[in-house]
Image (tube, rainbow, N blue to C red; front, side, top):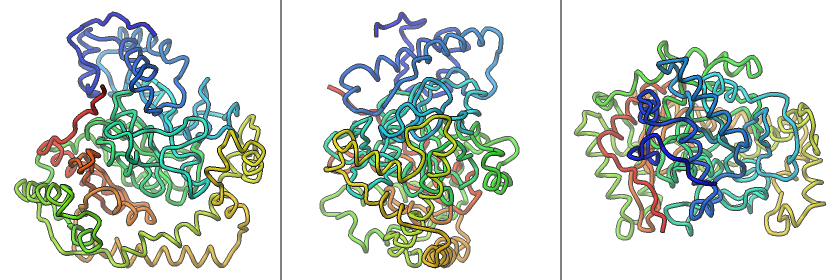
Amino acid sequence: MEPEESASSSFSIDEATIEDIQQAFQQNRLSCREVVKHYLNAIESNPKKTLSAVIEVNPDALSEAAKADENFKLINPCKSGLEGIPILLKDNIATKDRLNTTAGSFALLGSVVPRDAGVVDRLRKAGAIILGKAGLSEWANFRGDEIPSGWSARGGTVKNPYNVEEDPGGSSTGSAVGVAANLATVSLGTETNRSIIEPCSVNCVVGIKPTVGLTSRSGVIPPTHRQGTVGPIGRTVADAVTLLDVIVGYDPRDSVATKAAAQYIPRGGYKQFLNKDGLKGKKLGNLWSTFENAGIWDPDTSPVPGIYKKHIETMRQLGAIIIDDVEIANFLKIMQGDDEFLAMQYELKVELNDHLSKLVESPVRTLADVIAYNETHPEQEMLETYNQNIFIKSEKTNLPSKDYTDALDSLKTLREEGFEKFMNDNNFDAMVAPGHLAASALANGGYPCIIVPGGFDDYDVPVGILFGGLKGSEPKLIEIAYAFERATKVRRSPKFS
């Protein structure tokens, strides 16, 4: 693709924020078409092409950008903040256009969805440009336990742009890498357990896992809606929050969850909580002792402990009240996730069968069909290298089941006696922890969290700082994360030779 002459050669699209781009649009220094073409060039050109962050680009992205440019002449100023902004979507989020929605599997290639996913409908109404589909761990990492982070049959293996030999995190891998490597302005991922938070942590971007139900899951290929959510990814907290404002809200096709969570959406939206003094007076529970006792990072060889402790002191200087040496009860049992995994095996079969049955056209209609497809296309789906044992276990389940009910009861006890008790008994505004692992303590209860770039380990792999809270605590978490980001400014773009 040939480069297009820019309205202003002085404007750098790489690392530009949504606000930067919108101002350039308003000042006629930049067009939406130029931004889209810049990203398409980056996606299709080496060395960024070798990252495999994008499975498929939208063939209509440039024409949609041209329409957005025409709209700018009629609508001024922008309303949503996303007008003309290119966005990547994880390849399990449905789009009713010429893009495929396959969860990375050839089994769904050529299938036709009935409509846009709920969040995509909101994006289009806000004027955003769907740039393409991002790579992911196939079937959101629920096909088999041998599949590495970021691998799918359709997309290959997404690579970490900071160190291509290291883990890129999953399952929303391409969504995080695409934003980190400046292949899009922002993106959407999905999470059941660390699936947004982990890849954002190790790719030096901001990820928000919203309270379950705050964003619609309609049109999203599940493993489970009980704890599944759609969330925004950006290079800054402000960009992620701008995207969050657009995608939250009630959806009749995900009515129970979105109606229940609608109570948490603040009047005036979330951008009002981008407060540089947001740490002042906030009481945070510091989970460092949990990681120190588990020996996650060796202070003699890893820079992470020192980086984290420095950030804790910075937060104290900014007025945060940080309580050390506190732990979440049964944290290690929660991390092991046995009950969670068992419950999701039952849910996967039911929910995936329901999703596949509603497709307008599809080569597969049930989980059993997908398993059979993989078995008859072993080379295409690399079945001899990466198994599908999770699929097979799920297919053997049947509801109702005492095992399933017992697992749900156990999970209820774990969250009530674990994270909820930890937060309520100590009157914490949020918990804070290094990296992504503590996000598992938030998964079962559908609690929100935000990961912000925090530093780099001894392999030059980024490490984020995680802030988590109880349901509906996004306003506090945004205040904390934004103030932390403003004070530390850790993010840097990856280097390409």
